[in-house]
Each structure stands twice: as structure tokens, then as C-alpha cells.
Amino acid sequence: MTEIGPIVFQAPEWLLAVLLVPVLGVLGLLWWRRAGRAAAAYADPRLVDVRSPRWSRNAQLLGGLLGLLAITALAVGAARPSVDVTREEERGTVILAIDTSLSMRKDDLQPSRLVAASDAAKRLLGEAPDSTAIGLVNFADRARTLVTPTVERAVVAAALDDLPEPREGTALGDAVATSLSLLSGAGVLEEIPANSQDSPARIVLLTDGARTLGLEPSAAAARAQAVQVPVFTILVGDDPPHPRFGDPRETLALLATQTGGTYTQTTDDADLARVFEDIGKTLTPVQRLRELTVWLVAAALGLLSLAGLVLALGRPRQAAWKIRGVDTPGAA
Image (cartoon, one colour):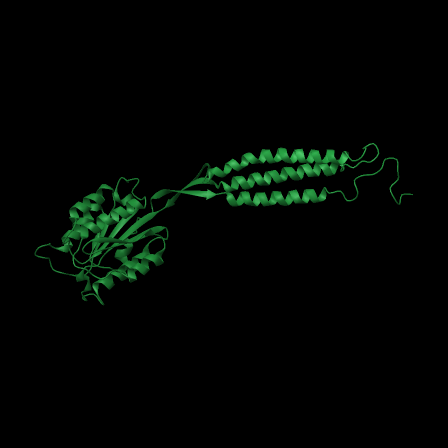
């Protein structure tokens, strides 16, 4: 459903130019009347009628009026009038958070875990609906934003081909927090749904390990849960539990379960498609301004053309004056 609001002006200062139109009209009318009186002053209208025919004078008035209307249309067009159009669209935003820690160099997945994760992320781009905006975050010792949410898939794919060099550390919780900040900046979190299944936002986390520094995953999960954003976690690789940082399977499963997402240890297309099973099914009001300037410029050009045509047709075809009582040359 589309709702059309009132007309708004993006450059309202140009509307002041409309005030000049009446001034131009009065000046033009005074000039037109003075021109007629000046012509009559050189001859006695009882003997020599130097005035233009009535139909010609009417054409001059009509042409001038059309010209003033054209100037008005241009002035209003310069103010950039726009219609506030709000349309409900199927919208969604997904943040891909990809691990670039040193352990992602391991080659148990060919040619490496990082390349495998990047390829999975690219396939995920193909699974996303066209209207879904996708952002990209990488994380190692800290989380970094690589791409803000966009519907341009080529931009995200290019960033995946140029991921930063692996660094030591896995700031898992920071990755979730940075992703939530991106979603908030994109305006996706302005209205919090009743549950995570109705959320127009998703976070997809691709990593091979548990958190080693930064924000605790449980704290990050609580933040995502508060705004009903599900986190889908994908474990890349099969490392055993770490004696200090625990089992990455448990960490990622808890993060997904607590937020309403899913946890998987594979990266096949079916698992990736699951991320988008219900995304985009929530209708989101999208506000746009539809500018009307081009129509006003077209109207102004049309009025100017019509004014020129009227003035051309109203121009006398022969001398407008004659001596009363005297036949014109060539008369019988």
C-alpha cells in the first residue's frame, strides 16, 4: 500500500521569486498601455488609426499572461516541490561478520578456512532477496566495518575478495556489537518487533573459534536479544575445545539459540538459504520524496512555447493604420 502525503519544498527560499511575478505583470501592463498611448500621440485617431487591431492587442495580453505563468512555474520548480510517498516494502538487512584471525589460515578446508568462509559468504549473497541490504564486518583482535549495508552485491563481493590480513585474536562479542551498530545506523532497529522471527535484520557470523578477547558472547547475545535480532552462527573448521576459552561449538550454539538464530557447522547452500527463509516477509514502511520539478519545468517550456505562438499569430499582417476617408493605395 502506498500513502501519498502533502507536497513539501526542498528549497523553499525560491518561492520568494513568485512574489516578483505580480510586479512583472504590473510593469508589463503599464508598458503595454504606454506604448498604445505613445503611438496615438503622433496622430489624430480620427484621421490616422495607428493602434493595433483589437484581436492583436488581446493576443499580446494573452501571450504576456502565459509568459508570467511560465515564470511562476519555473520559480516553483526551483523550490524543488516533492510529494512525500510512503510505501510498504519487503525490506531486510543482513550483516555478515567474518573471522579473520590467524587460525583461519588453516588448510583443513581447502584452500583455507578463510577462503572457504569467504566463498560461503559469496554464496549467501546469491541467496539473499534483491531488496535485502547486506553489510560486512571482519573481526580478529577487534571488529571493523568493511561495508555498510547496501543492495549492491558487487561492492560486498569485492570486499570479500580483499579481506584484511589475518591477525591474532577472536573478538567474537565485538563482532556482534559492531553488527548491531551497523543495523542501528541503517535505521533497521527503529521499531523492535515482538519476536526475532519478525525482525527485518539478521547477523551471520562465520568463525572457527571461541571468543579470546573483547566483549563476552553472552553479553553480545543479550544486546541482540534486546532488539530481537537473530544471530546465525556458522562454525568453519573442527578445532577441539580450547583449555582456556572453551568449546567453540557451545559458544556459537548458545549465541544462536539465545537470539533466535541457528547454529551450523556446515556451509552448504541449504544452511545458507535458511538465513533468508523468513527475512523480507515483514512489511517495512519506506519513505521517499518524489520530486515534481521536471513536470514544472516541462509545463514552463510548454507555456513559453504557447506564448510565442500566440504572439506570432497575433502580430498584424499589414500596416495597422489607415487615413480615415482616404482609400489605401491600389484601391479601385
